Image (cartoon, rainbow, N blue to C red; front, side):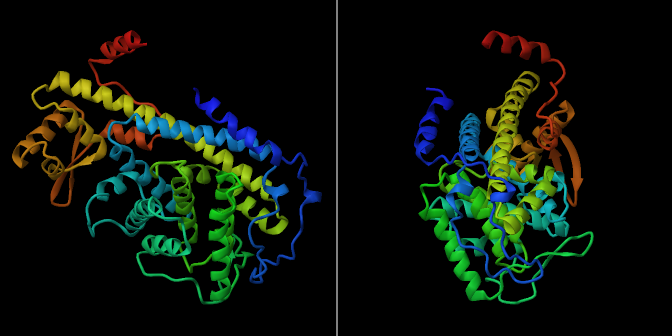
Length: 413
């Protein structure tokens, strides 16, 4: 049975709930929203069903669900899931932090990803905390439901300090260019707790609503409640991925959704405001569904390219250095693209002196590049880093086996 056939029953289940009304600006409810006053009247969830379950929304849900299923399937074809889990969340961490003007590089993140090192700059440390929050949050939702307490833990990890629900007044969101106040979130800790209770209840009680619609709705609501003094945006984006893991739409946090938000940053904030000002839920939900589908497709292609490069690198190393070749060794170069001698020792591939020889031989072969980092030498995997950081999911053959690999591909086809 194809993936598309698997989702045919999803469309049938929604037929009795499809609303054929076309939502336009005149039909939308206008609120008494004032950007300079605390939005204590933020409506509770769920929104009216005719605003969040239009025909177009339900059609897009099916397409996004298919793309998620294909992403899960692609991830299962990587023999060791750590290859993806070590890489894609770091890309998500860098992009999500960049949305908040916390700018680091992918190279710095990989260099310091598996060590505690004070030499990392503040932005890199903060992005790595995002990655940690994503990991820890995934473990939590694999055991229990998303809750307000879990959101507090996620934000505390992102910020590196113990946090609680915001109690102070005076929080406003401003246009960075003009200084104009564009939104003032609700105030009063007890009110925020009540709104978060409603937020959490919506995610788990309204199972008649497609989970991708619930994800989009809860993301708006969490950002509108703005429960913390800082870190709300990054926490909200982590919660999106945790929600998908909790509901079985992802097995691990490998959806690189912040890439889509960066590419459409103006639309992201504009559509959030349209929900607040005009209760235009449909435009917001369609934006998120398009983001899920596009990101899944791009990430699926990225995973396919990673798998192909792994197989090609294994062929090249086995042909060029058969005495040091093992699949476990090649796999490690993808788990740790900034590889240390200690990584080989810890994984039982070689003792320290032999591990150093192996890595230097791969550097001479051109598979790795040796660089100095503090007092130690690192061995970078350039082709893999170029693939990870490139927008196009392409890689270049190692010299000497391009023809052989191409011929084998044709034979297998």
